[in-house]
Image (cartoon, rainbow, N blue to C red; front, side):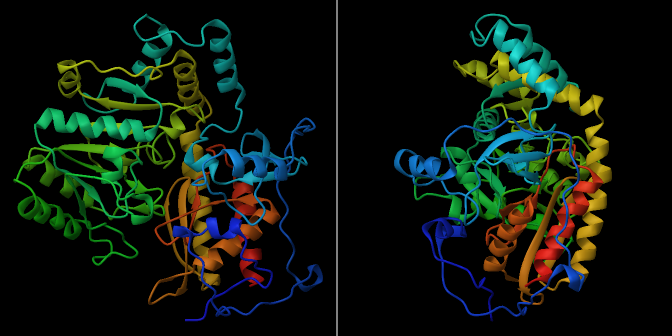
Length: 483
């Protein structure tokens, strides 16, 4: 299979570390011929929508200076996007600004984290006001901020899901949820999905099921079911057929009783894969019969991102026993949560459980402000309307460019998978890097994910507009048309 490499490609250390698994191999030319276009030939560089904000002048260190310090003092495991790393110094709503004041459309949202918009004034005010009054004490004392957010979150969830444990991240939340499931059931075995990502700590790394996110350390008691992937899966969109594998895992890999099942409704790191219709109801039914608890990982898909519903699991008509969340809950503030029923929550009283920063007043004040902004500014409706419009435009782009194999997702959690062969679905890894880099040069920032690193992750702030959507698609079209 012929593969594409930009004519200007240089095998720098930066480029190597931006590849999945950090592997780089030279390939020959692409199946798509390189073409020269100019403005007179009908192809015009897309223009970014106007925006009434200019950041103050930046006087800090340059990108080169920061990169030098990063290489010397920070973990070598930290990688970055783009041949020329972006130095982000300012943000406002759906836009970011570099050290020279250039504006970029942020269609990645800090990895599905910035939901209200960068530096949203209501969220900033809540953080500043709380910080001025009380930055931190301890949950051993009373403070209204933690109780107010817990109540607001409980009111957003169905059934008896109303007891909240606050954490600092999604990994922490999923770790706690898995431990609670094991304590409540008295069983150890957990089932998660292949291609899943649930964190990188001891328990969550076991539930994560991509080799490029797993270290060779003990990860016991986790079984990985066949992923109900409508695009690459063996059963297409027939969700119930995939669910049979869970029954097989329970019968042939466990004692017959399990602790629980954890899944996202749309896999984020895995490449924006929405689980096949009918899968979750069938899976939950099997898990319940085996005595297990159902854990919904809403770290990326929650907080109105899917548009049609506030939580991703609601799109599948199921009610979990435990819900985990982070990212969008704080609009960039380190905050996570586990929400469950009073009965399940009781298991943590068997010993002492404590989290120093979980429920910090500044973080919980920010979380409550986020919920208020989502409701007041109707961001869930906007995610649905703009997300549907953006998806339609991307599907139309798929019909135009053979490089696009699939367009998927809901609301403002969308994925575009690039392949060099539609029948074999060969991942277009290098093409993905090229388009990603060229879109940045035009002024559009998107993420990259999927096991093969060939899926664009489009998870912008929920204030994204139709004009922004047009600019994103036009930038992708322009870049692909020049390949």
